[in-house]
Image (tube, rainbow, N blue to C red; front, side, top):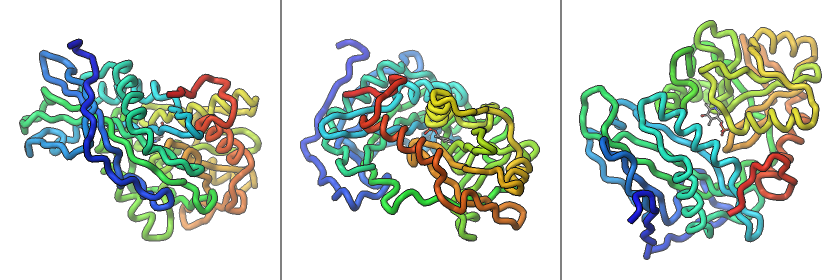
Length: 355
Ligand SMILES: *Cc1c(COP(=O)(O)O)cnc(C)c1O
């Protein structure tokens, strides 16, 4: 057998699928998963699609102790019998960038994409049909070597699991309220902010929890050095429309390279709407709001695509954006991007892959 040939063992015990109006994010998983192993000296090997099942790992596996894990997130979309992926090659490229940062050996991106296509095709009945639904795909790598010595693991597993998701905006797109985070930071220069690695998310939970206690959905993260410049919102990238120009923080080493962010930048340039990537301070947002120039704000990421922001809370002041309603550009970006993803809009950039 060729070393990179994907073996498939089909499940003989198919699960009951959830009713489409009762899907809970990340709770149910499809019938199969992809796995492959890394062994020092041998490289990545044994790619296989197998029935979805718990893993058996040694309690000393490094992933449990030292956080040597990375992940990705993307979706498969359905339009009748057509199934689409959106820029999936970018996810595997980013997975390898994350891998590099935390000393995990790189995977073969072409093999990973091929595995993903086979897995989605096999479990395609799990992609829900109702409008706005999709199949969430979670590729990830874990360090499995049973050894507590602090050093990169000598063994790893790469997996892809998939979970149906209901419509994110069942009750319409309601803008969220955001607390500007002044105590905690999510990333700092030289840290791991640019990598999708588990520890970044563990350290951000407390900010979110405290924000929720006082009625806010998420936090706006400021830079880790001066706590002055805006970086991200929750686990999304962030955009502002100020006086007719769209501004998003420039990638600076501690901001995650969102694929949605990149897609929005392309769309805006395509439409010849002024857009810039640069440093933007929270003081500047405050001033723009005071002068009536903060027109729109939104977060971007695969899960929600675009999440309009209706309010920022900073230094005991509420900065209300666009009367707490979704802005017209935000709406147009949402409609266009989801239209490309679901195959109902033209795809001028060739982002869609049909299975
Ligand atoms: C995944 C992620 C994003 C969004 O990335 P997309 O590729 O657009 O889904 C933004 N910020 C953080 C911190 C993330 O983990």
